[in-house]
Image (cartoon, rainbow, N blue to C red; front, top):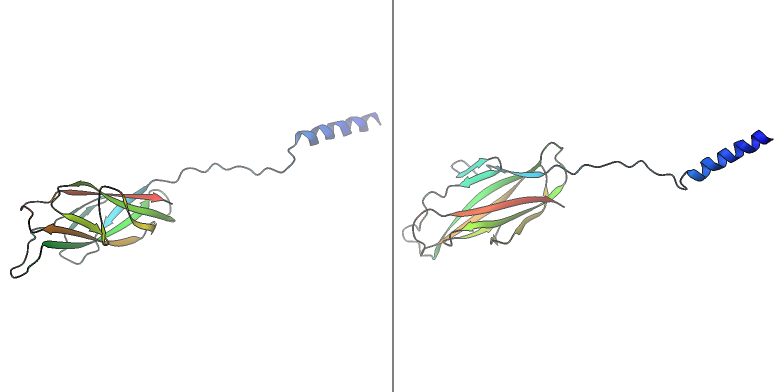
Length: 162
């Protein structure tokens, strides 16, 4: 009986030391891989988008009013393809795509998908699917009163997970 009593005390001690509810094994999730942006040539032949991974240049060449056209500005439109990618992982999920002007020489107005671009970040797409190409229209308006010469503007694009 004495041994039975000792066994009961040991079982009681073990039962008291165990948590009251069954705990699940905790997994440590690593932070998602960073997002990057790739520019994709989607325009027809003769386009002036030069893409190099996460950088792209648009050559407007020479723009000006055509003879007989009366207007206050020249508008140039280019279609830009953007793919948001996550390095080292499967392409899944959505992201917010924003753009802003980092530098502007003051001689032009810039719009993306009809929204005027400023130095404040503007949401271009609120739910861009990671891994797919989305197309956007870049519009640059140059007033007739502008002095001739190259335009100096820099657009910064950012992709962030939701």
